[in-house]
Length: 87
Image 1 (cartoon, rainbow, N blue to C red):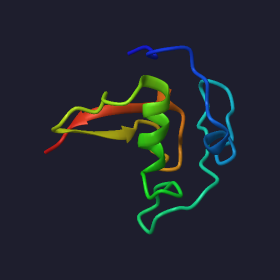
Image 2 (tube, helix red, strand yellow):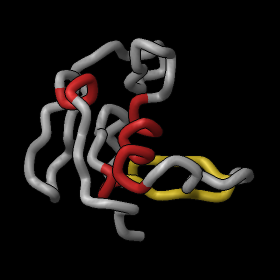
Image 3 (cartoon, rainbow, N blue to C red):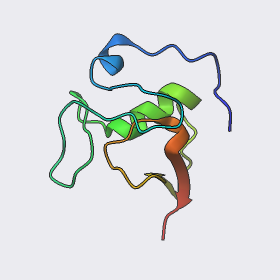
Image 4 (tube, rainbow, N blue to C red):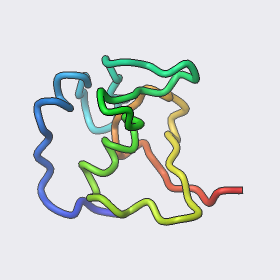
């Protein structure tokens, strides 16, 4: 899946993410939930926000959820994320 448009990240995202190379994890530096995932100031799951910024809103279809294939719950690199069918 390719980005919907050239990627321009808002400051409120880049202030809370350490963006490294395309192949490395981009660690979330903001608030972390009790289950270990990044959470935005508005209560949104940070990795879902990162994915939406990259691919556009609406790419997570009903019946699917987003996971980090790298296994790092704080990773915000959209290239490390995959959609998986819910059980």
